[in-house]
Image (cartoon, rainbow, N blue to C red; front, side, top):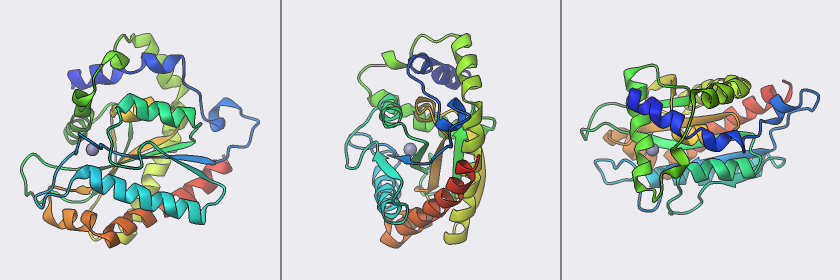
Length: 263
Ligand SMILES: [Zn+2]
């Protein structure tokens, strides 16, 4: 846990100078509008992410769902601009994903991943949506440690160094409103996925994902299923399964948009 907290703290200084708050928090008089959504397909390129017993890779599952979701948003929510951190199979550093989101003035950041167990195949199954906070449970800490391990593929780690506790506290306070919206969106995602997928709803959880720290807006990370479970893997691999995830997340976005824009 100590190591993980250090990793979380280490990325924050880069945010202090560049963080902008969402419209919902920075201008109380302005009407918040969910006009830019950033879709983040986890992993990519040399980083395959977890690999299922049938050989399907997390980077493929994440991209498949994100591209279908982006197309649905374009079709059904024409006033919303979609920004991708990657739209093909190439490697993008974690800090860079946050930079892309911030530069686009995103109002919601959705990171899509797959869960996995060290032993494969395993029977662990189902979906969980995380929002950013230091992990409270053993399982959440384990998931965050696995996802954060991607920085081993990055050529320089300077982006994650030099942080003081004061920086951490200031950033946390500034983003309290974002955390509230993130938690709300996370619970809507779980509700909508539960309506569509025949695998367990493992609920909303909190963990310290580096990729979420970098995006200065309400943000969640969805572990769509356990790619280490043959049944979950088969769903993730199928076009129908990808579409169910995309439709579920779209339905959550529609409900969230109504709540966000009247806040
Ligand atoms: Zn992942």
